Image (cartoon, rainbow, N blue to C red):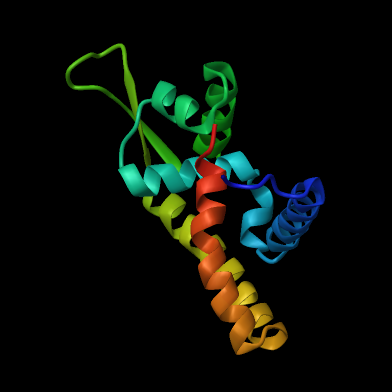
Length: 145
């Protein structure tokens, strides 16, 4: 039988991940104009190429209205394009523009560069192995509903 984790683990993990996320947000000048959900939406579009606004809203677990506002902002920035569906003209298909993809990849690269430097300057070889092993359980936590 699996034992229950100490409740302090949840507090410590939440605190550490929240602080890391805040720190990473500051490491990209390019990404400061985008919210976390906007960046996540752009990531989904990079991965899936084309999605309906309702599909994006469901994946991001936000309302269709909130997604509409988010997409309007990304459209104003020139990061997404909209086109009518060929099968149902009432539906709009969203995709990243070339500028949107370039910007998203730049944000990712800036943050990855900072994180790699932070890991190399603060972690031992054993720490790096521990971080590698922690990725799978952290991913399961993110996927938990």
